[in-house]
Length: 107
Image (cartoon, rainbow, N blue to C red):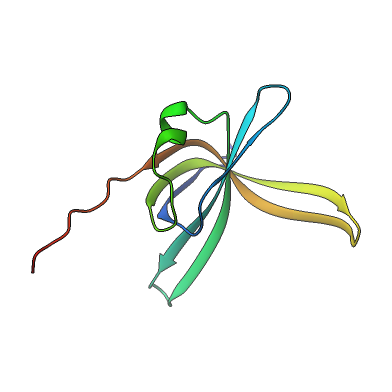
């Protein structure tokens, strides 16, 4: 059995981009930063797309640095550009949750 399941917990690397098409479909694009310390320090910035995002998600303050959880699948896209055939792997989200902003400590 094959399985294509991605779960990320990270922070937004930039403000999201919302595109609306003539068909009425909407596309939310996010860049999610995921940090790892083991087995070595690493920082990945992963492109995430969410088709027809819920209005509640779009209405939230989605700015750089906000923590998000993403569940979806990896997908490789191909397209033609001036430089020739291009491709990229992105996460196609089924669900995006914005995590609450942590309370400030007085310590």
